[in-house]
Image 1 (spheres, helix red, strand yellow):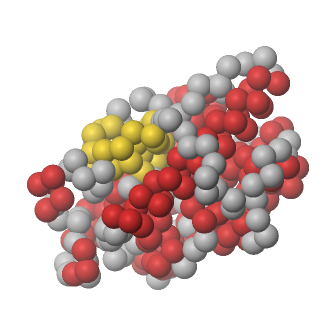
Image 2: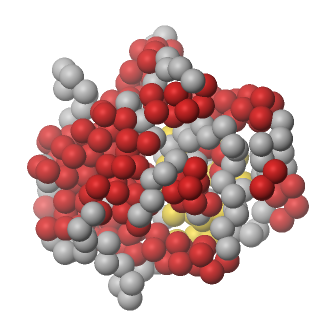
Length: 289
Ligand SMILES: [Zn+2]
């Protein structure tokens, strides 16, 4: 993706390093993070469950190695600049798309933090990965996640990172369109497996919206480079529920899926990217995902 020397969004809220003493907490384990893996995994699961109950959408990276490793300051600042350019591009694309339908687009801020911070959805912990909080309409991102994505999960390349941001912005678009609230209401009275099935449709739609954004970033903004889409698809394939569960626990439990399989995530991203048509993203009426 061509991103250097391009407009950066003003909607970045930088709280990096403000965690102070909190960084000593159990989940921030640095290079010795393999210690106490069992208890750590339980804590991670607990965090994710709490996050889901509170309506947070975690990217849910249940990496058995624990929380993201710290990235060097220089590397972090480059990642910060990259995220700010991607966010600016999402603003341009979604503003134009909303305007075309006679609606206003309210930009979503990204809160950058290290390890932990407070959010409108409760405590944000980098162990749950990037997420969108519908309550305060903000995206929470520890830049260390991108290192985890590349080195831990093997999804490298700048557009793998752009896809992650595009996905979270997709949740914001869902929120503005009323989809997020409606789904969360429906989920409230459902058994867990059915609530999970709805969550999968919500997540696949966010992947499709990330695809729509990528389509416009290429066709309208002209900032994509060869290989970018493959990088996004590579990331989508590595964060499918089946891939993560296989990696984390050695077997898969489809009823517990909340984000969709690798194949589904790739398919829905592609659907948005190939069509550029937001009506193609209605995962709630699709018979097969
Ligand atoms: Zn999501």
